[in-house]
Length: 193
Image 1 (cartoon, helix red, strand yellow):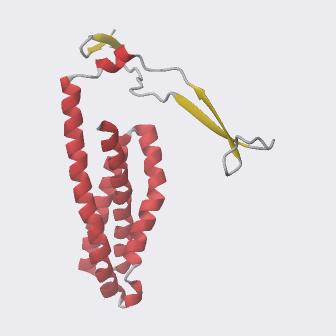
Image 2 (cartoon, rainbow, N blue to C red):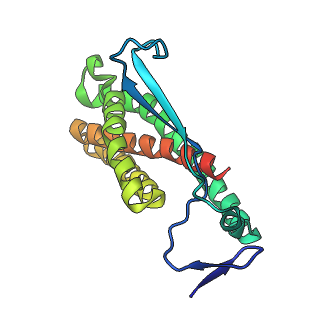
Image 3 (cartoon, rainbow, N blue to C red):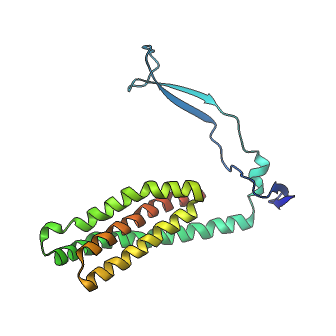
């Protein structure tokens, strides 16, 4: 048994993994040891071969339905709204975060500390979020990243209330996780376009 989808009503087995796009050429770069003139400027030889098409066009047509198009539009709208809100939050971390850092630390030398914590949070979490997306899916990765960013925003607010500089830095780092998720959301929206 399977589920009939699309114009053709093709049976697709439950739990099937279906590739919706293919790459027709695979290239491998190997270190050039033989002095071959076809090497790239960095000294690597490029070997390319055509790969067989994995996706049957009838299977791809099975996903070309009004329901799927509606879901795609809704998802792109949601990802766009997340982009806007996350972008505003990232901007506030830079401006308000530096003012709060100066006030809580008592020195102008710490003005860039929240921005640094945010950048480090984004850099360190991007690999974790990418692995999570590969193993559990983009939705889980995006929700996790944006939930941690929400926790970071809450931490920043609490740090101002209790005058705690370390909590401000932790909140800034968690806001950086949101920046990494924000970048992932751009790729997700592009893939759906």
